[in-house]
Image (cartoon, rainbow, N blue to C red):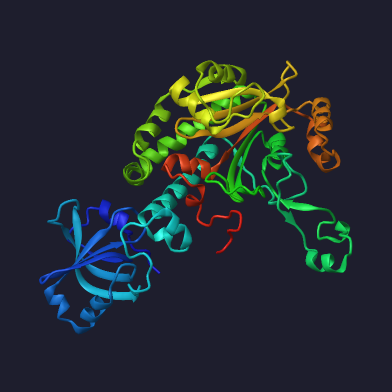
Length: 466
């Protein structure tokens, strides 16, 4: 099969006068006495291409029958000449010479007939929603951002590591994990037989991973600069617009790197991704700016152009308390910053992106490096306007005695983490890293408001339909 130029490619080529073949889906059909006008889209870009069938072509019985059966959503193949368009808003159109109806979409049954549908309605037909402008644009941005992530790290000497999806350890210590088992739990429950995990596939309890970080640290201590980019899972029963049960995480890790190095990489990473989105996804960003989040482009441009303000957690709490602003959740030293706090810091205090450092150790994970004050850890969160936290990371605790002591304080069993502790026993180094939830990045870049709308197949409580 020879790959034909996409509509995106045809619209950017100097191919006027050439014979072209268009394959795609009909967005609209408009008929006059003189001609039939079809708007066709193949998903390669937001723009449609207009195909014009004149009255002479309609005299062909087979073609005329196909035209009668054409409707929004039908797939077609059109062969014709690319000619200058007299219509406003388009440079070229296709003068149709041959029309082939490939797949019908009967209007009495096809659910995407109207030009506008609510996002709530589209979530009910998620298998078809990518055929709309909104979700096709999300898919294109998601594709470009995934590629840009690999480009960013590869160009900076990082190695891509595939970390396991099945694990026996909880990286976050939160316990909200999906269990993986080959045992027939239903049969065991009915028989009243106690569960013996030694008879399970792995001989012990196993789970879907909540993070690739602990695993990727093993390669960091040999290859220096590594990253993982893959699916992660949380069994939190959180039915919110910012939570998914299955999502993708980007987690770089650097040996011989301290908190300042981590902050520098994280801020460069965000600015690089946003700049690429603005440049390479300009048409789709303009669509989101117009239809989804007015002012989106301007806010993204400011992030690229603005220096990131740095403040400690203690300074951030002081700013929140001194502001006398009314918050749903009252800020105090020791609280976890809420989205409303993060937005206030970026939009009212700093007027741009903020990096908050040195959080209380009680609200952060066990593996974060303890500061000399005994109260805080060398953690950092990157906050951006309009959204709040977009990156979370830290310098890791690389000193064996302090890491073991912290695990004891939290009541974490050491046995499942012996391999992780070995990294501190043999040739340990200071090292740092961070995590970026891919879908949260996409929420920020597209301006979409529900995280289930930026992943192709959302998984959430009571939602695993297709």
